[in-house]
Length: 175
Image (cartoon, rainbow, N blue to C red; front, side, top):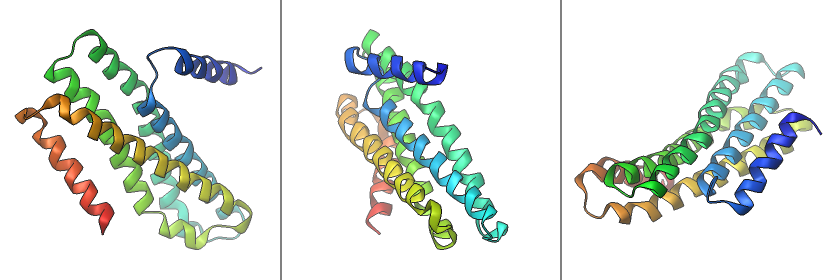
C-alpha cells in the first residue's frame, strides 16, 4: 500500500477509536476532497475544448479552498485537543472558530460553482456533482459543530463575533 493510503488508513483508525480526529476534521477533509474534485473537473474541462477563461478562475478558487480546508483538518484536531485539556472560553472559541471557517469556506465555494457547472465537460460532470455533495457535507458538519459548541460559551461576549457570523451564514443560505 502506498504511504498516502497508509496515512489515511491510520487516520481513519484513529477516528474510529480515539477522541481525535472528530467530525469537523472529517467534514473539512470531505470539503477538501470536494474542492479537489471540482478543480479536477475544471482542468479536464479546459483540456476538452471548454474555453480556459470560463473555468480558470474557478479552478484557482477550488484549489485555494482545498488548501484552506485541508489546513483546517489539523486545526480542528489541535483546537479540540486543547478543549480536552482545558475547557475555557478561549479553547471553546478556537474549537468553534474552526468549524465556522469550514462552513464559511464550503459555502463560499458552493456559491461560486455556477460558472463551472455551465462549462463542465460531460465526462467529468459526475466528479463535479460529487465535489458539490462533499462541500455540502463539509458545510453541514461545520454548522452543526458551531451550533453544538456555542452553548458552552453561554453568553460570553467573546463569542458574539462567531454568533454574528453564524447568523449571517444561515441568512445567506436561506436566500
